[in-house]
Every structure is written in C-alpha cells, then in structure tokens.
Length: 99
Image (cartoon, rainbow, N blue to C red; front, side, top):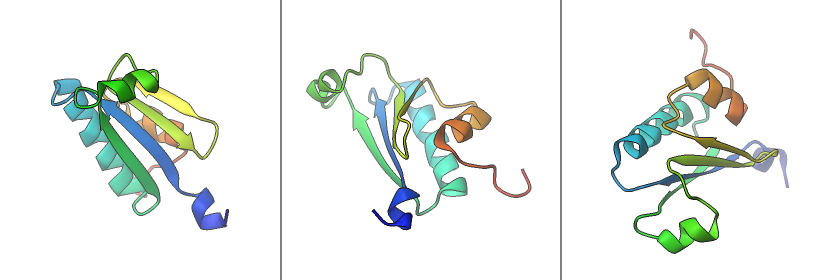
C-alpha cells in the first residue's frame, strides 16, 4: 500500500431511507468530506430500508451509523453527525484554515 492509499478515509454510512436523522447525517458527512478530505475519502452509503439483509449482515440495528474502516482503528459513530469537532476527531481530520 503506498502513502496515498494510506491517507484515504474508507467510510460507510448506514441510513434508513429519507428519515430526518439520516438526511441530516448525509449532509453533515458530505460537508466535512468536501471541506476537509476532498479527494481523500471513499464513502459508501447503505440504505438499510432498501437492503435490510446488508444491515443485518453488518450488525447494524440503529441508524444513522457511520463506520470508519481506514485508517485504523475502526470507529463507529451513531447519530446525525452534527457535532463537527467530534466528527473531525473520529475521522482524524483537522479543521480547515480560518475555522
């Protein structure tokens, strides 16, 4: 694995359709990724209403749930991801200049 591959965030966000918390979580995650990790994040969004077997197989019983797979350690966050500082810390990102 080269240095560029090590810097890539590998994330999966589990949502429940257009539920309010799911919509907000997607928006918060996209905002942080665009501002702080543009081009360095691989994000998969899994709608467990469309693919309930996937949610069961992955052990997801509550949404929204964000899972950071890489870089290690793996981290899981429940909720709408509205606490920006906490989300940045979990993802290992710094605030953008001027914030």
